[in-house]
Length: 320
Ligand SMILES: Cc1cc2nc3c(=O)[nH]c(=O)nc-3n(C[C@H](O)[C@H](O)[C@H](O)COP(=O)(O)O)c2cc1C
Image (cartoon, rainbow, N blue to C red; front, side, top):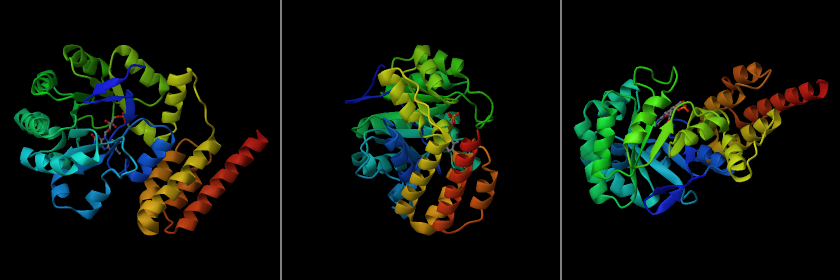
């Protein structure tokens, strides 16, 4: 496995993609427990960093996670510069979100809207490369002008780009266009990471074999953070490490505890619901768990639901 040179670091060519509402401290902690080589924060509003919004500051990496990269979003290079200055000592890598298709974000000129006004992207790239001492990357989507944009970002000195091969109109549906991303990769000399439809070990291996320098894993990790342990086993021992439904239960319990520790009971239970739903999606007889999870408010109720789900899995194994 070829490592990727990023500033003074050599990074493993796969890691956790930024996901708003998902890649918070407890989820990153879980991914590190499953041997993720690096993780991204959620996208973080540059203006809110400057305003020291407490919930935004909560999203920044903690001292016990030196391999967490920060993704910022914003549209004004002065604000991004100021936010980057404040956070550069907390991380080893800053990424600028130029991919988010959510209307609320694009309306402010941020996210994928930056691709429609590339001069703004270049201004952001310039101010960061001239003033920030750590590597800077951009996460981009499929657009007609993407090659031109990437060449210009490379000329400015940007260290890496990630391409999500879906258009804004596609959102997260349809297939990610790896061929499109690869045609751009072939024209660039800086590392190019691929994002989109990386759901298992085979997909990571295929993308690396195709020639991408690395990949970011998003929904595949949201559903099964164990993908990082599988990747570690695959790249170090050449083995596919299987896990069963009981391992998923163990992970669900561990993650809920991580969330309680970080957010306390009220926020922890509320925020866990989306995770519990994603984690249990592919477990047999789990509909009852999801239906009940939506309704509960207390931590002990969540633990009880996980216990019940575990019991039903054990029963099924016993009668198989
Ligand atoms: C719930 C969710 C939140 C996301 N939030 C972000 C984000 O904050 N920043 C970003 O650059 N991409 C974000 N993405 C996009 C992912 O990083 C990734 O590019 C996309 O999901 C494609 O990868 P996949 O097909 O493997 O899921 C998000 C995706 C999902 C599903």
